[in-house]
Image: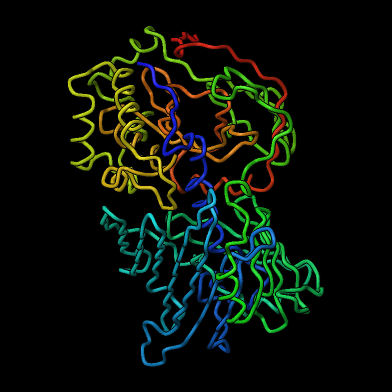
Length: 530
């Protein structure tokens, strides 16, 4: 089988490289871009959930902030908090709305995200919800407490309705945007640790807030006396400024995104003037020193990654060899993919119907967004592979079907394999999630690779699948590559909970091309790497 990248609607598939990968990671992060439902009054220890966070004298909040990308407005964030004295179970009601217009490939894409949190009279989390609407998808997540540590969570997307019971420790704070009213008391040199919850991935992580100094900061053309803060989360440091009234004045990220206090009129004006904003794809691309002349034909390349600390295990794969590792840089040799040899394939006879070794079971399991056990996905996988038993041929059939049948369309969404099967459109994340779910449904271990790939003199964030057929083999059904070229640099493996880790490189990573090697081959060669 031989597949080559073609044009789609007049555009090379390479123009579909970013979309949900970087955007969803950023959205998950931005919706907390240092603004949490936290109202701390103890600043020298770890807080224990909302019970420690809410100050008794804080009753009403009504905060407007405009969102800017590299200084250009794209929308606003509006946060409110009210007290309902008639309802002791929903005594504190917190709401946040983020509304933005994002320019992508010259087209404007609208986004709206709403978060609601309800606490009882004792400041215990009772319910929370997250809703995100984009032109391609509506996602709804609602959670309600069912006992001391557990919540019943309902997830709805276009084709998915899933209920699950999730264990949520009592000391977590939902990360979605909320101003820190009492943080005006945080003095330089003091710090605060909060355990936060991401309602999209249902994972928790520590956030550390450090007070740096008192200074004057500007927001929307006005000066404010504020406390400067450094906020560390997922190996990323944000900058925030809290005014004397306890409300957020300004927040900055390393990715070029800024929120600043404004009036309601300025907030709506920011949304209306968003057409002048920078294109998202260009703004998020990783700039490169040096050039790769023939990226799609590149068989190996040496790259120097600068500006970000990496652990060896984050970078090293069977294609990626770490040659040097410094405090905030790494040099590595990246090879193009290959077809596993007959010897490798024969050594994994269990792929033709035997029980999978324990180490491969996670790569065969269904998940909330990879619904490989759903009857529709199982039926489609069976239809694609038929009676084929050879694992490599099954992988080729699934790859070819996804590449040829999924419409390559710009999409801002939380990817879901079942949704993609219903809509048959999307970008790299959608292609990848559908491939991985179909592969698992067909009995092939598969995983999601997320990183960057070279296109038009820059590296763009991209996703592609890896499938085990006697050896791990990486394919790209978005670009039509049976095996990936050497410019595919994997940084993360896994679903959304893992992909959020990309934020540590956004706006920080720089890449230098040290040396490139290439040769023309009609098709990847089978290799025995033993």
